Image 1 (cartoon, rainbow, N blue to C red):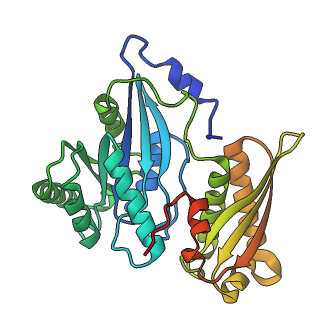
Image 2: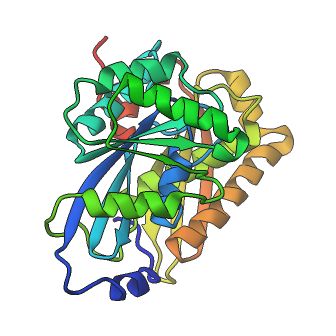
Length: 316
């Protein structure tokens, strides 16, 4: 079931009834930690994808849905595009590349602090063969001097033609409204693909797992390596309106399991409490969350884990 939010009614009512409807898919791509998830959440006006300081947090393309006057904007928050080293890396990069090829518009988000690094240069080369309108967005502009921003924008536009360039701070929201207005005017005319109240098409089971994974990384971002994943294994809608959710955290070694559990189970209890509170807000009902930790050596080579994450399993 997709997420929805009742307050979206107000935005719908304010749309221009005389304007033709527009709807388009917009792939937000960039290097890891460029701020893609933060930007998508800002454009949608609600949290639809997880955010973490840990790189490569987003593993599957997540669609967030926003309204702007008569336009419905379907943002695809993609995994960061980088040089893949593992099977999971390849699956994530493949998913991002596929999303870019299927979109109506492409937003390339560049961390203005980092500029054109190897990952950005690789993306520019890949985008050269994608025949879609491309919009350049420089992020984290509040941390860079104006002269540097202008030079970076000129450099990127010299390397690849963009139809427009925007400068934003996704975290503070500066410049986001102008970007959203531009996108709304340039998506194709056509009927909306989703009901007006929908904020995302992410299934609730996957959303719940992603929220717990976010809290896991927030709590253990230094101690726990990237090789951990979360799956929702059971979901019960109870008669009192609450949801009973069971999840499994997969790690690769016994030592990692001990880290997740913590002394006397304190760490996993804290992770569960944080995830439960956020899920209760997002789902708009009480949540009973039960977490289990399982050691599965080499889980990142298990096709079933990929299916549960919504990724294609690379054969090599």
